[in-house]
Length: 375
Length: 224
Image (tube, rainbow over all chains, first blue to last red; front, side, top):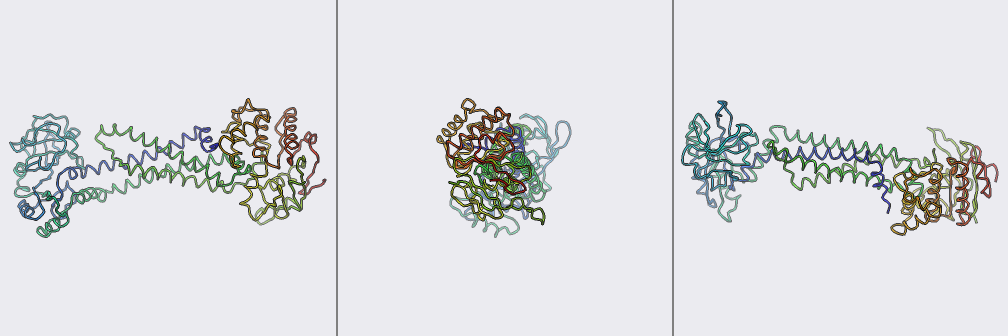
């Protein structure tokens, strides 16, 4: 079969290129916006996902993992006594001030546990031994901190809460949504350097369930015993932490608007180029009708052209995004694009391009077939 | 036997609220193997009549019969099928598809008529060969002369072996030598293929190959 749609596209390569660029631009925009947003959101819950805890006990109405409030650390004993709890430990997450060698002050987000290894935090260790954290005024610093704090090496000292402390190890991939660098230190040391708020207090209790325990039942029982706290499963807490940033910052709306604009630009370019192309090929379409074709054949040609532009544009857009990914990683921006989302964008691109072709369908349906006789 | 017949055909176009009559009770018939020229000045209704005979337009009233089948103006959805089966068109501007080469232009018409694959390719090449352009079968229309384009257009019109050929000013854009060659080709297509051929024309040379000449003025056939 002669494929008139494909042949016409290849015949007018410049127009085809413009259409593909339009679609690719929209696809890249959507991928980058959503991918970066998901990467950023992932930071908001990356520690929750990696911590080996099934349940999180928080103070009442804690909005996300970074913005913790305190409650008495002795509550952990009540949690440990709940049937189905294999173990429970306190975790402090707290903002601290860190002084750099230059003398400037920077904020840092501290994670403090008695036993980091037991809870799998930090999950990617670059250097150092977590067991050494309890031996003195030591801490681990995540490598991502270099962007804010400058280069650092294990063995160097920094001042945290006006106390000189030694960096004894470094981790990777431990990020916060607010980009505040994360440090890891011993639980008791954290209380010691910030006694006013943390002495006798914690910000979270991590719970590991016994094998076969029903998470909902355990959660319910902890809630009954700690009525002034909240209890979440890992997924619920991760969702709450991420959702806070979407709802409270308007980022979700911003993202939606950008994605909408990206789609609009793509649709307009495809619709405009297809329509112009249709107008220029009206006589050809009239000829198709004269030699026995109907509107369906012409719709088929236009639909095929829109689909080809969508597929090629999607592939170019996806390739562009893939090529940009390592560059973005260099400036600590992560792109997260689940295959399911890519599939949605692919189907959406085809649907929108076909939608754009509908304007041309309308024009073709109203072609006066007698135009084939006009000179 | 008449292959193409029109009886008391009228056609009105609407311009706003006004009905503008273009054809007034036109009757004609063309037999198999017969070549008829339709002459008339601009605005006389030639193209409208050709469109109606070619099932591109439907008449306001009257009856059109093509290859034994009466055209039903109430069923415009059936017209494409009738065009595919019974009519081959040749246009003044050739109307070849610029993105398709010579063979593909013919093959596409065959595809529309339900012939696909190797059979369509073979038949397209045979028709291109029949119009003497085998050596140019892979040329795009932009690389062909006017005469060559019109020969490809004739090959395309012959695709699917239709019993009726309709040509609209087929020699208007050709010089006289090439025009004469094309007219010979038309005569051969009509006579050896036993097809009814109606040529709308201003070109007096067309009279050299026709069996009859019809004149149309102000929407009425004057001579028969």
